[in-house]
Amino acid sequence: MAKDLQPGDPVRVREDYPPGHIRTPVFIRGKRGVVTQVFGAFENPEITAYELTGPKKMLYAVRFRQVDIWPDYTGPTQDTVDIDIYEHWLEKAEGRAS
Amino acid sequence: MSETQHGAAEHDHGHDHGDHGHAPPQPDDKVHSYYQILGQALKELLIEKGIVTADEVREAIEKRDSITPARGARIVARAWTDPIYKALLMRDANQAAADMGAPTPNTHLVAVENTDAVHNVIVCTLCSCYPRELLGLPPSWYKSRQYRARIVREPRAVLREFGTDLSDEVEIRVHDSTADIRYLVVPLQPKGTEAMSADELESLITRDSMIGVAEVKAPT
Image 1 (cartoon, rainbow over the protein chains, first blue to last red):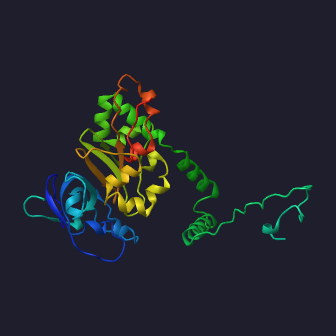
Image 2 (cartoon, each protein chain N blue to C red):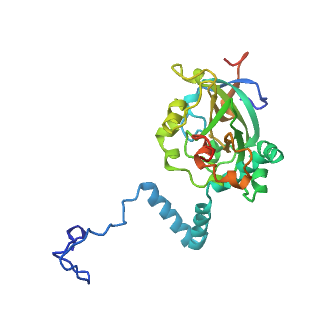
Image 3 (cartoon, helix red, strand yellow):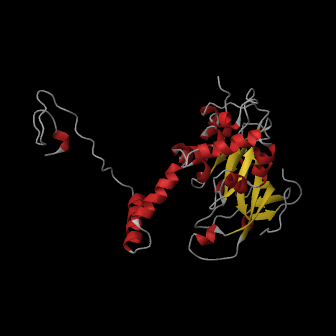
């Protein structure tokens, strides 16, 4: 869990594969990126999908380098994917994101 | 009689074809998918229970269908010609949209700006999230598994298939709208259009350029 992240913070997406309605794409689990934006606290769709209520979760935009996601990526190293990820899917990473 | 046997030789529907036949009428009763039937059943139940009326459902669909990419184009054209408005759009896109008569109450809207160094493109890899309040309903390719899987995997190849061939110097930045945020791409203003008014520019700005799979072209 990482709820006090700031732009520039290196993070790692939890590598976990729970069943159910999950808004963190499988292809990004376990990957390292950098927080680029803090959107604030939002309802957690992984809970509200079941008409349950739970605490709001901080939502962040996290930037990943294509070459870090796909080892065989053939495009330039500066190409990126920004993904919106809730706090409970993020862990602070050590040092700089690659 | 069966509609498929319909022709000049045999018909029983009240008018004469003389010496020519005609193609059988096209039936409009296609097979509905499980989810279409589920949606229809839900709608009928809500109406039966008095929670919504058929007219309210129709009106909501009509309203949604009336939104076209022209809404987004007006916003982009103003941003190109009004630096103060553009600063607002980049800082608070919901407010900027509301100022142009396009309130977006159900959306947390974020504008992402293309520059000479960065080209943005949007996708929803999990479903079909799209800035509907500004661009209307998404095109069918946007919802396809092909686009959703490939734009995050080989964005340059996909953009080339759309006719958009970007330099290797440019960073391609794909935005996967997996949560509550909806993205609007502010495309790069084409060179040579600096003297045009916002109204004139508006007609150049297309849906695909605001998704990010195309660039805006100067008039020829």
